[in-house]
Image 1 (cartoon, rainbow over the protein chains, first blue to last red):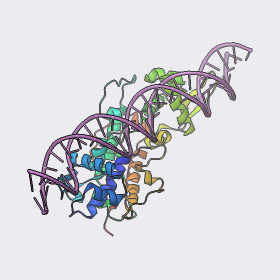
Image 2 (cartoon, chains in turn green, yellow, orange, blue):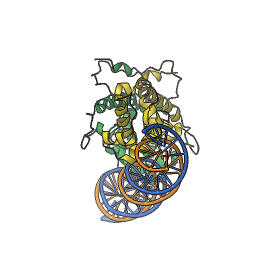
Image 3 (tube, each protein chain N blue to C red):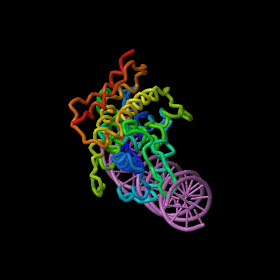
Image 4 (tube, chains in turn green, cyan, brown, purple):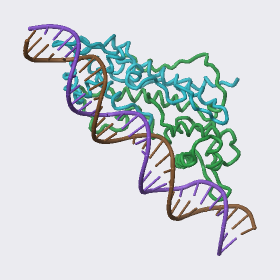
Length: 151
Length: 151
DNA sequence: TAATTGAGGACTATTTTAGTCCTATTTAGT
DNA sequence: ACTAAATAGGACTAAAATAGTCCTCAATTA
């Protein structure tokens, strides 16, 4: 289904919640209450996001989490790669070991292009966008096919 | 990692192989030999692709598989949705049951837009493209962010 | 009618993912 | 100092999805 993991899905919900009150620091428990996601899971996700430098944390009795930068500068791609690693649809986009297709695999380069297209799409959408209401788009053009012009 | 399943990956390899010799019919065993993928697995994938109407099959002693239409008319999106179902990054893009986020989830609509962007990117690339050598793109613009204009 | 090939489904094993819990460490307040 | 509240980090378990195999039936051609 080409789907994200549940944790990534949760992460966007959690980050949206935090972004809406960007001036406060949010404790794991507070986030769990507000989102309805179980505390241990929330905690796990928050830690991952700190490691990925999407959030910053402060310890101690008045501690908590906050965005590491403005919502406009946190992309959906950032969130996805934090939770799931590099955005790569196929294994061979990452490493080629053991891949010896008989007919010389020109496919991998093509997957590279597709990956790029998706990566760019995900980088173009930020947390700031996610917490805004949506408009119906008037134009919706993705000129990927033009990349494949005859040589 | 936002990755496709191995079966989908295999499917593109298999289809590329068939597309390169589009005039012949290919037996499961022949495909297995040519691609190095185990026969039962190849067989499973071929059957799925027939059900999805990407391939057509003929039974009997001279039977085998062939593309259901020209390589130009089979998109990567077709292959992915055949193997993995509808292209939807998040659960709530498909159904909303049980999703009661406290703060009223405006996120789902945004995911819808992202899904569309990716869907279009994947529809723009065909099997014919995949078996062609790749060019380095000169332009690579995806105007997704323009969809999020202020209301 | 025998040989070859696909259809369909059941089943098992493996891997990945989700989720929980425990033990440090840090900080603020008293 | 001490205590309470909060994060850090990792280990562990359980559940679900995926991959892979196998068996029986149906169709076609020589």
